[in-house]
Image (cartoon, rainbow, N blue to C red; front, side, top):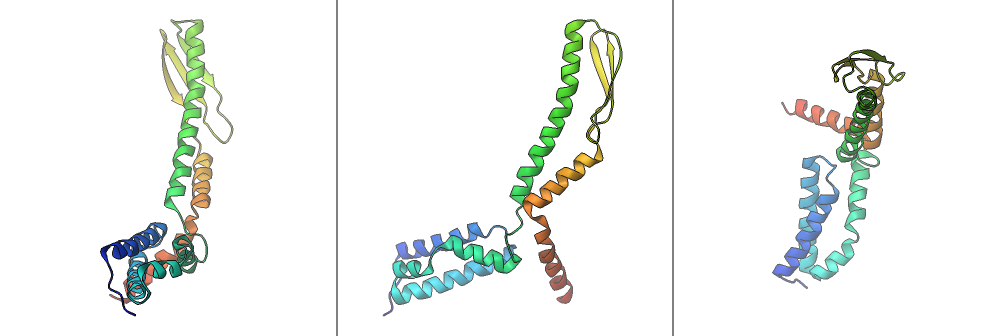
Length: 185
């Protein structure tokens, strides 16, 4: 039995195709496009044979299919730049906020005690996190030297970002792309 696809059937097929594409955002573009095309061709053929409703029912859960594609491509969960950015940006924001909060607290306390404060003050830094500060007051106005984040903070945030985003899983894909690019030239 061969059925012609109505426009609603085509919309259902396209919805399934683009839903799969949404779940495959971590795959390389070429891989995503080929999987989209394959699913579209298979669903249209199955819809013509058994109807769109039955073809989509037999397809199963699109999220499960996408997860299987990702496991086949990466050998496990895919790297996620979104998760990496959602870890890295707040971590840096928090560290810079803590650095500034420490200095602002000292400044506000000193100015509250003496609005026309003049002098030089040294604040010791936080071991492995912040450098020492030199705060110079001139008639209640403050200038600051120091108080920057130490390299260990940057290393820890980068390591946390790589772990959270599983970014090491992108390395084999980059190697494959490089190999394919050099063999075709």
